[in-house]
Length: 457
Ligand code: TRP
Image 1: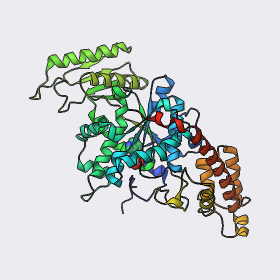
Image 2: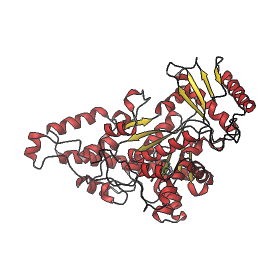
Image 3: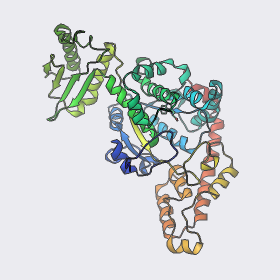
């Protein structure tokens, strides 16, 4: 039996073995990081893993710019699961990130059959109007449509050269029957993720993509493609120091001093090293171990604390020579709240979640009939206690509606000990959910004039 976990953006099953996910996919746990002003999602370990989030946090602490990016599928209705991503985007915005949001209209058109016009209408009415209610700052948020930003397709095309069918198959579990829109869409998404680093969209800076764990394949693909496209590799040496090596590829060999017969063009190689050294001197290094012939340059006095700065120099040199100069995106991963019926949350199953346009009576009905972690009789419940880990009402308080950690802890303990009954937990959840929704709807009204300002042209 295959013991490995498959993670797949299109599957309906969900693994909740988060430690194994971290191990298998080489993610880092969030525990070792010092998260500034942690949101409830961080405090409750709902955002549980990352790749290179430290790069973002270092940029913040050095007051360098950084961005956050996400995308939306304009085909369904916005629900609590979508809200959770925007909460994180807002959190990054509050830390100082610029925000880019892709409306995946090309993807929705190709894979779900909506017209681009329907996509636009849906994006505005279902999603962007809620973003303004959730407090995203329109002046620091750029929302664009894939169909209107041809560069994202072009990047997907260009970077597509660095992968092949076998790799795509192994990342996504595709086979011969898979239609090609499922291959094009991830490549356009790669374009979405990296394009904010282009000069006309803000320039080289770290970009973080907060996603549900099922979206990690897209990030693995994007990170792989960006690093393969880099002209200079950078490594922390075994005994400290940083070492740079050239990554000679078809499209850059001439620029990196390789003749078409494969021999080294000493003059151009020396020139390149000269430029490299000049740029590194400007950021404070003076001691180098040069080996132009092998295409390596050591900086013995540098440490891993200098990694980000040196990387940036390498990317801008690459870019000035005609390369893309892309940094690998960072990412964070959140767990999923269970669907209200105990299954997966899904736009196509209205009872599995709460939509941001639900009425009070919908909310009441959904929470009342939600999956409960209580015992089947009151006596048993009082005696043995309930299980908050699988109780939808408790889980929704934890994920979405209850800010107060201390109160939440009381609810948890009260439920486990049997003091709080399942009906009571639902009642508390209904009350909090309704009050959240009321505020949300009010803000949505108040901020409706801002919706157009989120769009960038
Ligand atoms: N494919 C994503 C979805 O199904 C939407 C999306 C498009 C996206 N581009 C993106 C998500 C970039 C994150 C980053 O929801």
